[in-house]
Length: 318
Image (cartoon, rainbow, N blue to C red; front, side, top):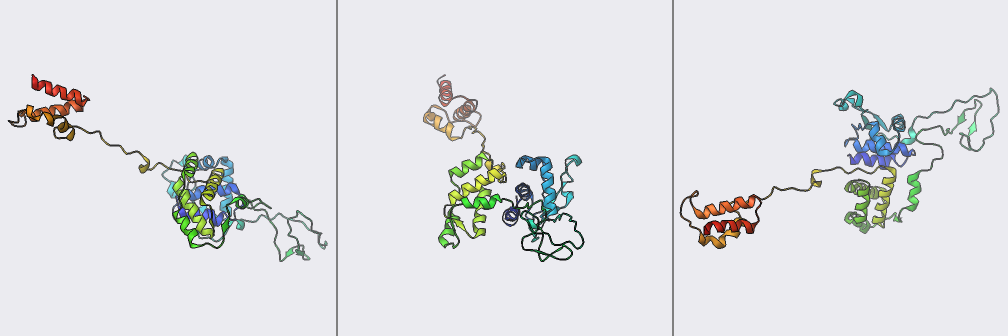
């Protein structure tokens, strides 16, 4: 995951990209790119699965993003290790290009005019902006057509802007205490449960949330409520960072203790009866050492401490 690529996609491109489906595809590519925004090659089927879109829609949105100059074809050799029938296109994100979604290729519909015809009156709903004047050749002077753009449909409803109406109140003049509150803030139990239900990486989402607060220059008064809204939008849009199993997530396992003649368990059991054993002789013939070794073997074979000790003491009595 590249934080730089995701930040670029969310805050630089997302603010102007009106096509929600193309935006979700772009987020998947950004999540798979390296720190330079290059080398993203998730398959179309993977993108379709993570966004809930059809393969055809995914391919169309990739073509639209490429046509808009937002993404470009990268080093295809990165995917050479994959079988030819499973090899996907390698994409690079155009991080250093100042073009935005509105710079997508313009497909202006052809018009026919009659030589010498007078200017037609402007009507509501036409592709011609109000207030423009036509010249003798029926070409607009000093204005532009609202041409078809696959990423910016005419009069779109931007869900990101509409949702801002429901954001917690923010203050444009940020006191130092507000920034300190953001630095001290961390997700709560409700956030953990919400992220877990979506199989999302809570730490990654919290980092993106903090970056968004600082980059906007406005820090929410209620950070918990703002982050809850952030997670819910991500779940609805399908662009939360997915949690992956890391080695630190696996429970630690340790080998079971193996008893020896010198371990504390053997000594704790047998030391109160030490006077019953002869200490003369070498390792193989010393009764005290032999008793401790035998007790260790009994414990290792599953005998309970009481049963194992009783067996040892019974041998002494015999």
